[in-house]
Image 1 (tube, rainbow, N blue to C red):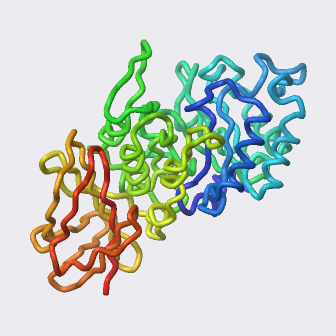
Image 2 (image 1 turned 135 degrees about the horizontal axis):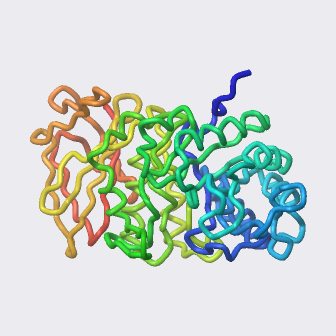
Image 3 (image 1 turned 45 degrees about the vertical axis):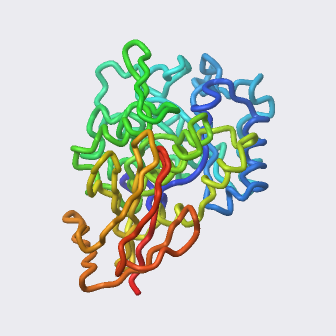
Length: 388
């Protein structure tokens, strides 16, 4: 049978947690078990989060005598199979990290030359998700490298969600649809609103830098069920304001990005939990059409993004990028919102829509009247429009 990527995975953007943003390589089995417990206890699982992904640093610095990867016995004394079983016992799924190059980004053994061997090992452990990075790759061809790992996973026989992480350097939106289930479109995120932090030869970008980076690329057209643009793990709960966290979460949902938490879910605030488990916002991310939002307008530093929804509905996000609160008075008749890519058009002159505020959880009337609201600093008004 010809190898392919696994079907019927990531039909909506994947949701879960990744260890890197908060813990980097300081990971261990107690952390993973604690996170899995909190998924259930705090209602994260009920909200749709299902993957717990260990990023770089889970293995020893050398392969064993058979060339197999070895889970670090100090960090994971029970072994990886037992840890995967624990996560599965909670009704959750487990993910691991590796890299297309000879070494991972943190200097551990990469998969180059061991793709099929590593895929068989992951299958034997019961792994459900592989994040595959792009360090130490020299002259490797990205498309071919990711195809090789895709084929290896398929040959190993256990369905694995394949997460491509080459930072958008090789235009993955042009080739990754049939290779992986999600692909990073930028370099690494960092927990700030609109900054860029240098690390020598590369840099990390804040929330709006990430959003802006690919705005001129044709990436909306290629996202959809089973294949998603990945705007990186979220920084919600990692030190920005609650308002910035809401805007961040709203935009990742609008853009149909995977919703992978990057905070310490064991110690997060009630407000962070409230944001991350907002089922009305998550429903926009998981809408059956799977069409990413587009920027409708940016007037007076208020960005308005629109996302077509199933049943001829819409989600609209108004983000205040100003350093002071703003008042909006939005006349639906003067703003003919439509999407040429998906051929969805609002046409408020012919249709009346009910308006729902997704963070306040209240109805705001209909599109027959102007919508008036105050939006705080770096905060968001996110609404859905449903035909009457």
